[in-house]
Each structure stands twice: as structure tokens, then as C-alpha cells.
Image: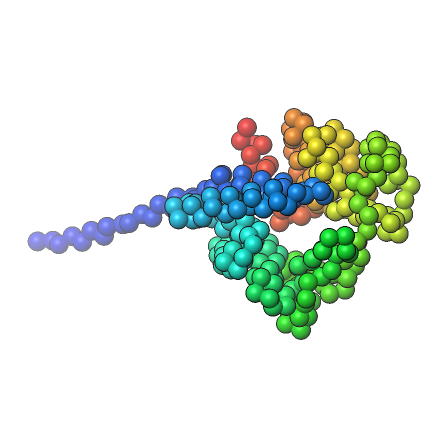
Length: 286
């Protein structure tokens, strides 16, 4: 008599969990509300509140699962107005990084700083700035001894010296102020070309020019915005974000293949640009 032993093999089937598309859309609307210079904070605050309610419902329904889901959700709570929201932003960002260690840590630093600020305590990284009425921007109370510049760099936060320079730039005039006098975008482009980028009284940094482009987009002036983004990539050819914004505007104008190339260039300059990765994947699926 022979006894035969059969081993039952168990096969593990892993099902890829997809990023929540609704959360992506909520995140994009949150960011769009902040990509213009003249923000009506009463209106945006109401939208922020509604977004937090919906995101809370998605959490309760177990529809927040991936690292990107937690990141997008954290950003919504980051824009809350109390310690409950700020505490949630910290918790959610920690989960996003736990699920994907390559996640940009800047939002965790910003969430920690804002949570401390909401509690009336000094921030430690230096991500929070405040402006009262017509006064200049100021950096919120900072305990610079708690975190080293090395850790700030790890979290994609400016060093203490860079924060001072950032504050100086934040208090420069905005390009949108030129619309009243020069009126036409082409004239503003000529003005920028003839200015000293660093010594100008206007914010002619990559970010300053980008913000002006987004202001035009918010006013449905996409063709004019495209000219601004085109200028920006010429002035700052090694900046990944200029190509990202250029690609966004091209896609909005229906120039999909040109937009695809711009996003690919952005990704080449910054392989960690997950937003560009996501949009390129969406373009390929169409």
C-alpha cells in the first residue's frame, strides 16, 4: 500500500488598487482655486468646507486606499480651518508616505507646521507665511532649532537662508498689476524680456510668471496664458514645473500631442513628478 501525500498549493492573487478618480478631481479643484492671484477667500473657504465633507464621506466608505488617495485627502484637510482638520492632514500624509516612501514629503512638513500654528505654537520647518491686509508677507513664528536644514531639504522645504529670499520675492509686485497699465499680454511679455529677472521690482521668478499664466487661464484667456508659459520655459529651461504648466495649457487647448511632449520633458527634468506621470498615462489611454 502506498500513501501519497498531495500538497495543496495556494495561489495568491493580488489585485491592483486603483487611485480614486473622484479624489483626484477634488484635489484638482482645490488647487485650481489657489492658482490665481486675486482669490476670494470667502468663496474658496465655502468650497473647502464642502470638499472636506465629501472627503470625510469617502474615508468612511473605505474609498481612500492608495498613497495618492491619502495625499490628495491630506491636501483637502490641510486647507481646513481648525486643529481637527490640521491633525487629520498630518495623519493622512504619514499614511501616504507609509504606503509609498517616494511620496513628496513637503506636504507632511507643511501639515505639521500648520497644525502647530493652529495650536498657537511656533512652526518648525518654515512653510507657513502670513499676510494681514495691505501689510507685507511675514514668515509665521518659527522655532528654527527643532529641525536642521538637512532635514528641511529632505522634506523639500527651503533652507532658512532660502526662506528669507523667498519672503523677499513674495513681497515684490505681481505681474497682474501690469494689466491695468500695459493692458495687453504681448506688451507684458516685452516688459519681462527687457527686465533684469532678479533685480526687477516685479516677481519675475519661474513661479511668479507661472502664477500670472494661471491667472489668465482662470479668466479663460488660454491662448494668452500659453504665450506666458512659452516665455517661462525659455527663461527657465531647466525648471520642470514650467513644462508641466505649459503641458497643462496645451492639453486644455486641445493640443494633446504637444502637451504630451511638454509633460514628458517635465518628467525628464524631474522623474518624481507623479502628476505628470498620471496625466501622461491618461493621455495614453485615450
